[in-house]
Amino acid sequence: MKDIKDIKKHVAKLSETEITTLKAIQSNLTNIQKKPTVSEDGLRVLENCLSELEIFKNNYTWRLIRLLKQNHMID
Image 1 (cartoon, one colour):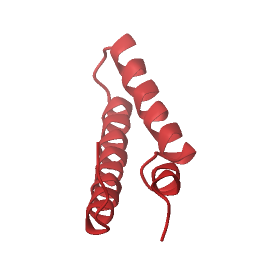
Image 2 (cartoon, rainbow, N blue to C red):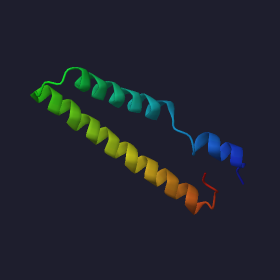
Image 3 (cartoon, helix red, strand yellow):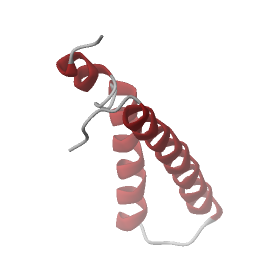
Image 4 (cartoon, rainbow, N blue to C red):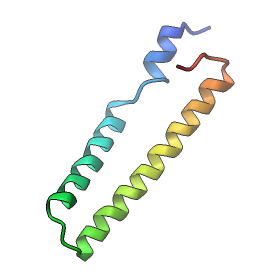
């Protein structure tokens, strides 16, 4: 049986890739905020941000479900 520390270290924490993705989304949104002109490129950036956030949310949800199915306490 895995120790709770190991579970929190691997499953209950965001990976470096996930953190990098969130930072990239944040950067893209900040750039749109700084340059508030409506353009096709801006729309593409927003669509990409939405797609990445949807994928992130789905992965996050499934990770939480896996933790719950393993009867782990979640903060």
